[in-house]
Length: 188
Image (tube, rainbow, N blue to C red):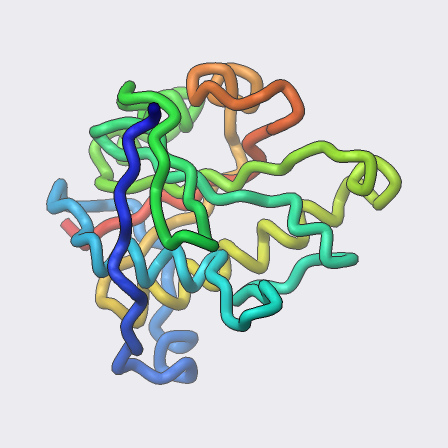
């Protein structure tokens, strides 16, 4: 049975959206201080949380495909965010942060968290435009940027992802492909 971590409920953030947008910057220098469970819960809720009983999310989804899932890479492994349960489910205990960068960005190796946005290929997504899952992931990444800024830390979105290698090491099914990453943490 996979290891599961139940996250705390997200809490309101003190910074306004206007201020977070004005202060948002890409950050590429992180301390090794881990994100607290509360910070991670707030970040994941902003990126892909559920906001209503009918399953509406914090980020829009083209045709309501909901084909993008957020995974978390940390020193203690790869974790799938289950928005319905507000929990993380471990897919592997292996630290894959460095693998997520294709050797291009050494700051990723020790940053506390990398969110991996994974698209699932389904019959519905095959019928839709392939770019639509990228639009969904982009909206989720932007939400993560704003939430990180509002909590006093930051991150950087990355599109250079070794999809096949990373997906295999994360133990993803063949129909799942990593498409974007958001590496984040407290400033160094």
